[in-house]
Image (cartoon, rainbow over the protein chains, first blue to last red):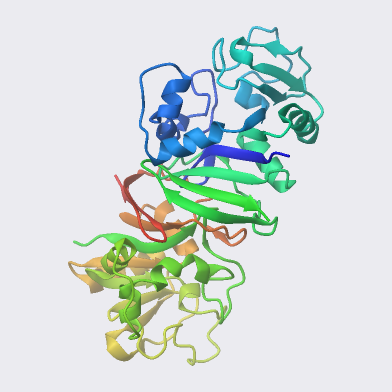
Length: 214
Length: 214
């Protein structure tokens, strides 16, 4: 059976996984794009968005690895879009245009039901209304032998850590200061939950840290 | 005039500058020594404590730099010792033995007066009862053209940042998880206070980040 993992998730020096005030122009909140610069520079990211080629160094190696062997995704509502509350209509189809970079089933946590959404390139969004554990069950079953990747956002990852659902967490530690936003670790005692740092690799624009559940 | 700076101050991946439960065996709290491993490995640290020689790489360069051009120190009460409340007597003379590694005046923040304490090697501890700003004035005057180094702990540095007393902060970001302890950044919006990351250098056991006030 595959792992449940978080990969290529960026955290600022002051501990934020997303900036404040998410809106359609700021999917990762204010300052979020600056945090993600390490990813935007990679060849993996460039190829995914069918533009020119990008960097092929250490950061890119981790970006590539983050997409390998992923059989299904679980993401929080805010990672799917900026709309809160009930879906007004089915117009919002995610941040990623007609062909999202998933190419596998994606289980979206929401309190508000919505029919399955089929996108180009084999991405299918399923809207799950009964919580993270249920979403992970669906995702495991869809992923078969492959891994389930929890994409984010911060509150989904925090719940996945607190409930020990996450087997492996790859963080890209970025030397930037956000000042405000969504704190990734606040109030979560990872060593007590059985998590340990097992690998640290400095990259071009981020330091890559692998944390595993023991 | 010199700068007011923090140097070689270690922060864990989950944002702690010290572990919980400081006591005579754990000057930096539980888990604190693991955080400091990068410093213990350096030649600067070995020479300071008159033992054998240590590593002379990047981490050591930052450790050496942290002691250069320092004309006076300001430290919090807990960095001087584990005793809380009024001084029971004058027996406690700091964590560092008869010859502390300062060799300049050190201004210790405390609510409880105590006479000046002269140590071997030209370190003189002054106990300041009227707050950080007063301690910094004393220290600036003692330092002359040299820098004032704020040694810690976390609450002293937090106050120095919140009140914009600190000109430069060198953090050693260590890829360890503490889980509990004293959070360095919580509730402090450094960009809004005018602080920016100006330099990042991966070392052997820590990533060195320089933050400056603009």
